Length: 217
Ligand code: T5A
Image (cartoon, rainbow, N blue to C red; front, side):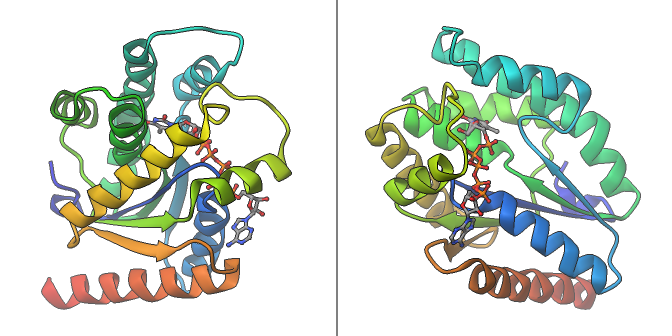
């Protein structure tokens, strides 16, 4: 089910750890609401009661699990998010802004952990009921900078954020490859800019996309 078949607009924000996704998703939501749009901001892993429980399991630094176990947990969280949050909001015609979605599984579990990308894509399709974003904003920053920002904000350990720099480098390179494969959907924004400049660029892209959609319909 492409999101374009539903009346709402499905926008995702992606990028490596500490790239500034949550900061951007919050400020973008606020600006769009001020412009009179109905926006639901949500995130993965999380966004539902089940997703919140799964998030604490999958990020728990005291738990060991295989790369596939980790993947199933993200996919289970995504399946409940799609069914309980995304489809209802998009059906109601809202703009949904999700901080992470299926590209994160391809980047982290595929490019980062080295799991088979085709299999992950097929599992993503099953977990999402085929719901793909209309537009994805990819915040691209070097892994060192993202990790430094994330660690400056919180010293709390997490099972994935604490993986080594080479892992996070592969994740970021993976995101860039996904963007290059789908330039019509994924817009790359330089996350090294200050937060205001990132917001300006993102707002321009989103407004252009929303205006284009109105003109097409
Ligand atoms: N994961 C997730 C997978 O492996 N597979 C999956 O399928 C999914 C869905 C949790 C982890 O799960 C992994 C990826 C993650 O490792 P998360 O909660 O989204 O996912 O984790 P993080 O990406 O680590 O979230 P962070 O909150 O750390 O990063 P953000 O949201 O990118 O960054 P943000 O906005 O919180 O900013 C971090 C700090 O930088 C500052 C902020 O004020 C904050 O202090 N900042 C800036 N500073 C300077 N310039 C800017 N432009 C800035 N923007 C923000």
